[in-house]
Length: 187
Image (tube, rainbow, N blue to C red; front, side, top):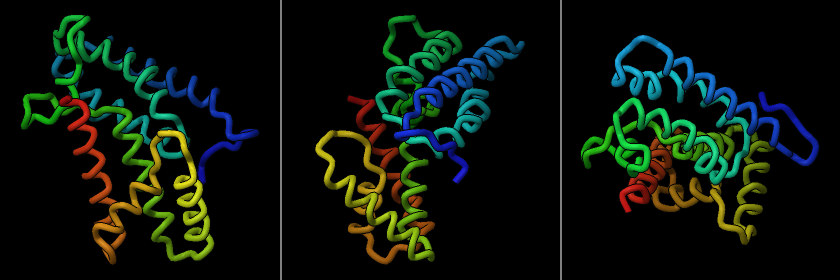
C-alpha cells in the first residue's frame, strides 16, 4: 500500500532518496535563522515526522539507518547542541529522565513504524491480510540472520498480553521497543 514495487524488492534507490531527503531537510533547518535549541526542536518536530512515511512503507535494514542516516543527522545535532565532534552522541537520544535530550532516533522510529504496520496486519478484520501476516511471521521465525523482526516483536507482546485490543497492542509494542533501544544506548 503506497510503496513502489521493484524487482526482487531492491530498495537501493529508495535508500538514496531517503538520504537525499534527510540531508535536504537538515540543511534547510541548519540554514534557518533560529537558535540552536530551536533547531533541535525542528529536528524532532519537523524533520523526523517528514521521514515517517518513507520509513513505514519500505523495509530497510536497521544497519542502513544506524550507519548511513544517523551519522548525517548526528553531525548537525552535535553542532546545534554544542557537543564536540568526537563526543559520544548517546545523550542526544536518551530520555530526559536520565539526562538526555530525548531527540528522535531514526532506527527506533523505523522499528516502531514497522511494528505498528505488523500489528495492523495481524489484527486486521480481513482474513487474507491476517493470513499474509501469519506467513510473514513464519518467515521471520525461520530466519537465521539477526535482524529486526517486527512480526516477532508483536507476537512476543501478544504472548505477554493475550486478548489485548489493537490500540493497546500497538502502544505496548512501541513502548517495549523504546525502552529496549534506550537501554541499549545507555550501555
